[in-house]
Length: 388
Image (cartoon, rainbow, N blue to C red; front, side, top):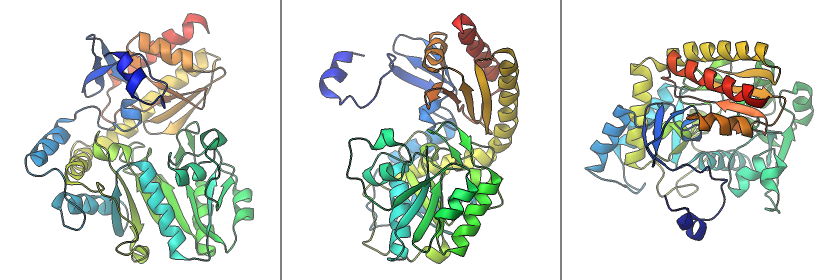
């Protein structure tokens, strides 16, 4: 790849890694020099089935031979099929389709604001992340993502993660919704406690507010359930999703309980490419493959295996201060910044991520194997041993 093309023509909104990926199959990717890597963070959390899952590829191929795009004033069958699968996997309601997690969260924000014009406050969490659009940046409880984009839309207030007493003190009749991720992703892989989850649900009921759960990163089997909220005794009013839903294609969606389905009427919300038949065909294949290949069970088993192996490393290396997460969404908190360890793993042809400066983020495909986990553990230990 000619880096000069990017330097001249592509906005520098990413800190790019000096690798050009040209091929992917399952847990493996290859660069333009023929080097093979084991990818333990496929698609920035968007590769729950790995790269180019054959059922997804076939579904895309079948659809593109017929029609690529259908305006949403017409019907397209894959959109209806995917909506049905999502509702059958969650709660009774309906689905709106967009193209990204940010767009899904924007739609959820619009819905809860429109439901009651007297309720404008949305409570989110400090260290949360909900997207890069202006409203979802305002919803994100991290100032580093907001700096320079002021004035931001108002109406967002931020509660400390898992602070039940603070959440109680913030609830008023002006609150339209409480919105958070079941596991904070960009915030350092912080699972929400059962107490906080159930308290949020009860407070929303008490104050006639809606509970929005952002499952853009945690959904589609990542945690060993189809959606992470299913680990808790709680059902949200609005559920947002994206990333892995399209198996590698751009898609986003939010599901809303049936009692709130009339809030958004024709003309009040829309998306030109949202719910297009190609992305929805891929989404149908993703949902079906997870069930047919028993991948939720594999995510639970391999998640526990990975946690056990990482706990073994923690006992041997003081640089690891905590291992946390659910299923195959795992964070390894370090006593020092983790970027160098990520680089060293890449030198050894293993791709992982570091978030929140010092938390290694491991999110392999949910069809990962023990042998693949063993290799990654070996490489991480080698990277730690080099100097730390």
